Image (cartoon, rainbow, N blue to C red; front, side, top):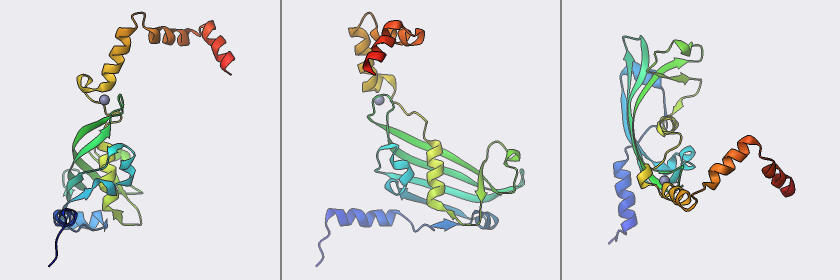
Length: 197
Ligand SMILES: [Zn+2]
């Protein structure tokens, strides 16, 4: 009799949750055939994302529809990606939950296409000789969807508390004075720099 540990049960459940996804896709062929691809990746598979996250637990799920935009006369990929990330707050460097729910609008073009003529709502998906990695495509979309400087709301950020404590404790605002000195090229400050060097 086989006893399943909690970990093997979790691993089995994860495999059940994740459908087999193609490693590479041919977007134009899929668009001409009107195919859809939906699935999930575990976040730690997205290596370029890892440096941006507090931890890489969780999933990104996506639904892509390969189709033709008749109005614009181009083949495209539309859909959405969703993820619940633990990003690094750029104020306090703590973990912050970031819900990503981002639409996908990719116009399928080749290297000869003048992408400046692509309708505004589409980002170019430029096809080269090689097939497109599905994982990298999802990773690209997720990277674009993450704000440049994610931060907690002010009233929920420990960094904001520390800043306000510093301001309260220093009624003469030493940082403001320092900033002013830097801007004006204060001679005293230059002196200290020289000594330091
Ligand atoms: Zn914060």
